[in-house]
Length: 87
Image (cartoon, rainbow, N blue to C red; front, top):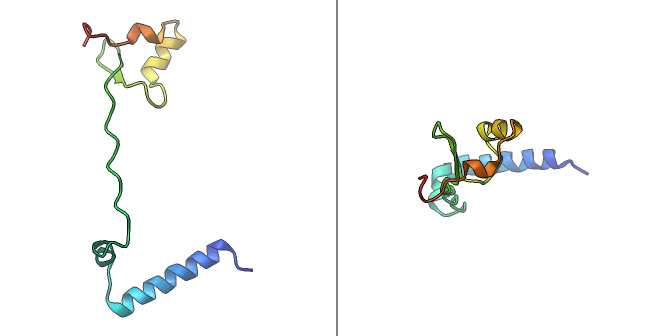
């Protein structure tokens, strides 16, 4: 039984040979619709937390260092919440 890595390497070699024999490029295959288009990058969310230096965070993903340091020092996350009057 062949390992997956060997099978992949053989498949890639076969594809490269076929492309060379038929004079195809990656751009040709993309133009023919062989690959799904990449989805657009996600739009950044609205800033929900901001510090006095203007650094902001939308509340998604890992907490940024500036906010983590403030929380570790005893401040609450809610202290940095952006309100309609703070924006």
